[in-house]
Image (cartoon, rainbow, N blue to C red; front, top):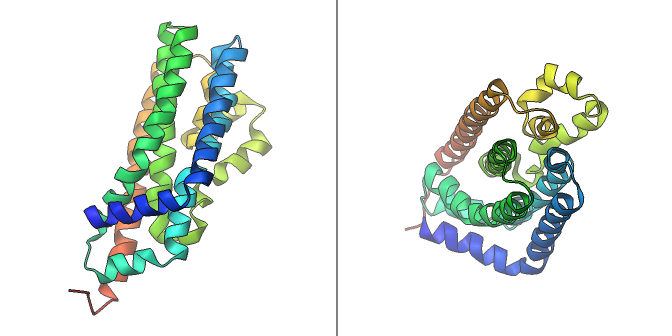
Length: 225
């Protein structure tokens, strides 16, 4: 698995300029939203939404380049198991999302340390991690179309202006739908929905990625030694 992590880190070094630009853009949007918006609920729902969307280009850039360079084929031929491939990629991507969330947490808590802000921040962190894991876990299936999981953004553009409609629709189970709903009061029911849907969706994404890789491994009769 160390070789998998090294290969992904090599890709990140190759793409350091693009990845740094994306990271800075996401942090700037997030920090600016918290500093300039007197209503932190709207800051999480609007600038926070956009910052999350921008940040997701980081795993997309890394994973798409990995597939375009056929790195996954070598990982499979080298005999790595599905869980090693997925976990290795996850461990390389997660530090960047933690750094992004740390910046968002510091700025938001400086402005407001109320219970509602802490709850919104916790939910926002869960949603960002969920979205990142979605891209990583589904990448074996979607390959260079890794960005497909964020299709919910386009759906929200059609229905995102009416929060009540979003809350009653299936969009409330999606990551970006729940992010836009942070503008509303945080209830215990909403927190439970966020946590349960995140756990269930990540489990489903992981299984899809795992069995997709396993199928590719089963089709590869020769392994490098």
